[in-house]
Image: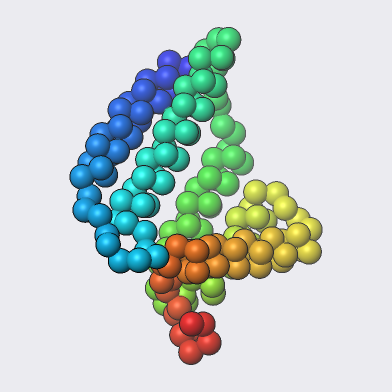
Length: 153
């Protein structure tokens, strides 16, 4: 596994570098108080590079080869998480960001072990509100309003 992680990290670092080169060629926007078209690609590239270097550093520090052997319960949890994510993506345009994201986060929190209803409820509301405010008002990205079209600006 160590060798595969090192190879994957190096390949993704090369991919991120190529992505950065292509991003550098995007045109500049001259509108005031708006991000350039290259803003999000630069953020994506930075996140990919940070994660790749973390994977590379962690893999180089591993003392020996280890082979993960996920049990059936873990495999089922992963498959269930992917199913929940696919349902989330399918319902996002119809329900809207807020109405689809809140149950998605609640389901993920319960799936991965959180059983306290107060934590699930407050975490769901806090994460959904924070993401909505960040993307809608911080980045100026219009999110799907869906069922709340008359209530959400």
